[in-house]
Amino acid sequence: MTKVKFLSGETVPLEMHKVRMVQKVNLYPVEDRLAAMEEAGYNTFLLKNRDIYLDMLTDSGVNAMSDNQYAAMLQADDSYAGSETFYRLEATLKDMFANDYFLPAHQGRACENIISQVLVTPGSTVLMNYHFTTSRAHITLRDGLVEEIIIDEGLKINSDHPFKGNMDIAKLEEAIARLGRDNIAFVRVEAGTNLIGGQPISLQNMRDVSAVCRDHGITTVFDASLLADNLYFIKVREAACAEMSLRDITREMGALMDVIYFSGRKLGFARGGGILTSNADLFAKMRELIPLYEGFLTYGGMSVREMEAMSVGLQETLDFDVISQTPIFVAAFTEELIKKGVPVVTPPGGLGCHVDAAAFCEHLPQTEYPAGALAAALFIAGGVRAMERGTLSEERRPDGSEPLAEMELVRLAIPRRVFTLSQVKYAADRLAWLHQNRELIGGLTFEEEPSVLRFFFGRLKATSDWPQQLAQAFRRDFGDSL
Ligand code: F0G
Image 1 (cartoon, rainbow, N blue to C red):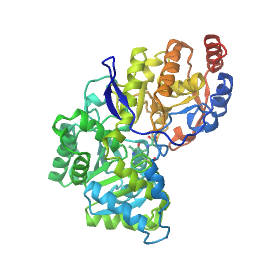
Image 2: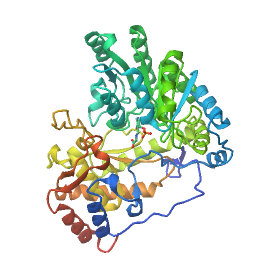
Image 3: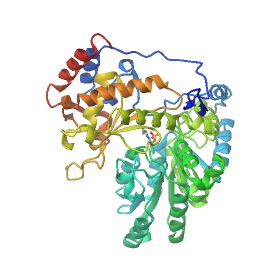
Image 4: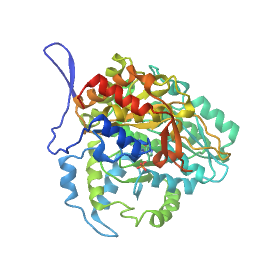
C-alpha cells in the first residue's frame, strides 16, 4: 500500500493493486449460522466454507496470487527429477537469504519434522522466542523440551514495545549457562511471532541472538514463515534499518541464522515450503530425510505450478507496496476496535487482529475456553470465521492435566490482498455488537478431544443454551438484516 493525503488533510492508505478476479461469498441468516456452528461442534476449523461470509481463520494458503504468479504457473516444468522449475525456485531462495543450499518440503510443519529429526535428541531443549503449535509438537514428539525466552513485554496484551517478538538476551545467556550448551538442541527464532499476536522481532535482536549462539557453538534456526510482515515492521519501526532495502535486511537475516525454514503457504503467496542452510553437514543430514517424507529433492511434495508461483511471490515479498497491506489493514482493524471499546492486542502486529478474549469474556473461566467461545459467538453474530489461540490450542500434559494458555486470544487473520476495508469494518462492527452483549457468551466443553493438536478437529458443546439466546438477541437488535 502507499499513503496519500486527502483534501481533508487526512493521510489515507491506498491499495497498490486492482482486483481482476473475484470469488462469490455467502452471508446467511443468523439462524443458519447457529445451525452451522452447532454442526461444526463449536470448532471454527470444522465449518464449511460455503457457510462462511468472511474467512479470517488464517492467512495460510489463502493469500491472493498476482497476475505474474499465474503467468509463471504456465511455464512450470513438470518432471519427477531435475525440473527447471525447482532450479528457478532454488536460485530465488538462495539469493534471497544468501544461503548455499535449499531443500524443498510440502509445507512449514514438514520442515519442522525434518529439522527436529536431525537436531532434537530426547531430553534436549529448544530455546525459542515463542512456540508455534506445530513447531512445539514436532520437538516434543522427539521427547525434546521447549523453553520460551521472549522479552517480558511480549506477553503483555497491551504495550508500546515495537518488537514484542524479541528474545530476552539475558534469559538466553542464563539458559545456556544453566542447561549447558550440549543440552540445547537449537535456538529457534520465529519471525512475526504468531501466537502472541503476530509481533515482530528486530534485526538488532537477531544479530544479538546470533552472536551469543555462535559464541557458544549453538545452532540457530529461523522460522521465516511470517517474514513479510516482520520486514514491514523493521522498515517502519527500526530506525537504524530505515535506509536498508528489504533485500539487504533479508540477506542479513539469512547470514545470521544457521538454518532457515518457512511455510510457503504464508511466505510467497502460494503453497509449499522449504529449508535453507549454508552448513554442508546439516544439509547432508536433512537431505536424506526429504525423499523419505516429502518427495524427490527437486519437488519435495510440492506441485511444480505452486513452486513457480512461489518463486514469483517470494520476489514480490521484497516489494514494500506488496507487504504493507496486511499490517496496515491490521492496524486499521485494531484502531476501529479500540474506538469501540473492544480489548485487543497492541501494538497491532502482522498476520491479523488479535482480540483479548480473557478480558472480553471476563465472566468465563479459562477451563471453559473463552477464546473458543468468542470465536464461535462471532461466527453466529456475523458469519466471520476466526481462530481460537488460547487454552484450546494447548496440548494436555503427559499426566492428562490441562495447561492454561498464557493468553486467550481470538485471531482474525487478514490474508494478503484478499479483503476490502468495508469487509474489515463489518467484522469490527459485529465484534463491537458482541462486546456490548458479552454477558450472553457462555462456555464450551469437549465432546470429543483428540490427543494431538486437539484444536484442529476436537468437537465441543455449549455449557448452556447461550448460542440460541445469542442468535435471538441478534435478531432482536438487527431486525431482518443479515
Ligand atoms: N511456523 C509458523 C510461524 C506458522 O505460522 C505456521 C503455520 C507454521 C510454522 C507451519 O506451517 O502450516 O505450512 O505447516 N501457521 C498457520 C496459521 C497454520 O494459521 O497460523 P504450515
